[in-house]
Image (cartoon, rainbow, N blue to C red; front, side, top):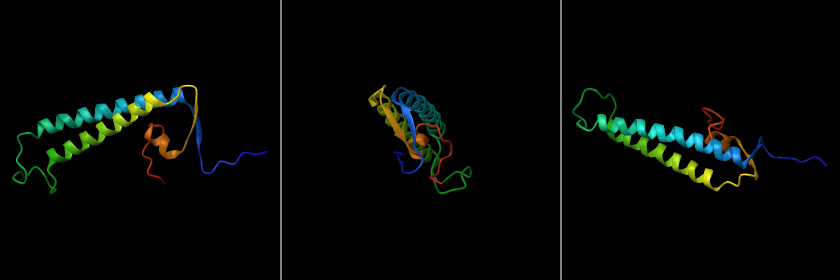
Length: 109
């Protein structure tokens, strides 16, 4: 009997899922650190009074938001890495593969 799987999914062993999650988390931790540096660089800037910005968004606030976004993603991935069962097999769709860094620039087609 043929097994039917809806959509395109890939089976990945838990140990590899944990390794991918940890690797991707480290990338997000690095990005969070990068944006933390930008928060510091913009610490002395006054909002709205600078001709350095061309948008209405405060660059310091934007950097803070990006830092938090990457920090949250990293912590989420560390949680996943710590809770997958190493010997189990996980059926991953494109969204899960993108979260783990396997698919780059995934936008859900």
